[in-house]
Length: 117
Image (tube, rainbow, N blue to C red):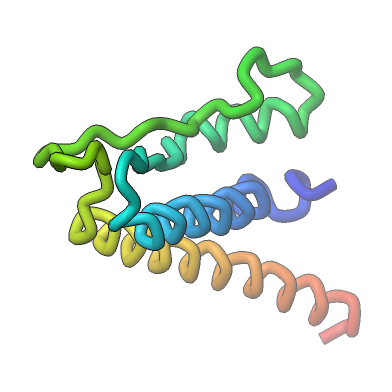
């Protein structure tokens, strides 16, 4: 039902929200020795999520979750680069907002149709 009603945008909104949490966790652990930054490969994760919604068995339920490689290694083993995380957070927030606007527009259209407007 979700995919028929909202296309891929329902799954994309959920995935963007999950990615926001992963990036926020990276930022929160920027000073934790040995912490390895993670991210979500949006395209791979979306493909896996849509396949599961269609009933296709996915070999890796964590498809799309990746370890982020550090461009400037830290002496304590932490791979979080705060500037990079902040940029990823901002980009994801913009994409989340755009997807949410689309879903809200779709809901508004359906509401108007049900009211007969």
